[in-house]
Image (tube, rainbow, N blue to C red; front, side, top):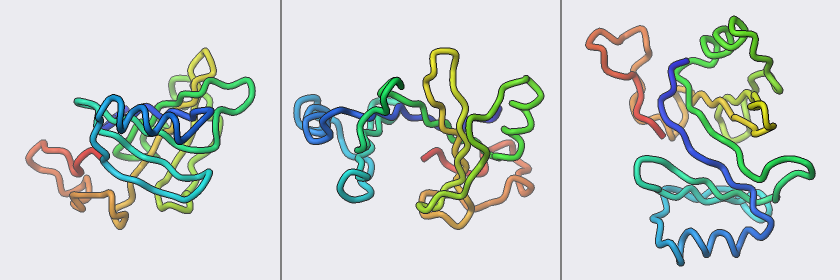
Length: 143
C-alpha cells in the first residue's frame, strides 16, 4: 500500500486537559485546528509525524488511540487489502470534511483510518494526478 503520510489520533477523556498538555506542556506547534465543540480537534507537529487530538473521547471498550494513514489511491489500497484478506471495518466514505475514509483494525482493535485527500480538497498541496507522474516524484505532498 502506498502510504504518503501518517498521524496518531488521540481520543482523550478530557479534551482541554490533553490539548493543554501537548500545546503548552510539551510545546508542540499547531499544524491545524478544525471543528467545533465536542467535534473539534488540533493536529500538532511532532518531529517527522503528526499527533491529532480530537474531541468525543474514547468509545467504550476501544483504545483511545487510532492511526491515520494517507493513501495515494483508496481504490488501490482497498484492492490490496482485499487481496491480503484484510477486512474493512467500514467501506470508503466521502466524509463531510471532504476526505475519503475507510477503516480497518489491527489485531488489538486499534482503528486505522485510511484517508485519501481528493484533488479539490484544500489539504491537497500538489494537484497533479498520479497518471501525470513521469519523474518518479510523488503526486502530492503529505498532509
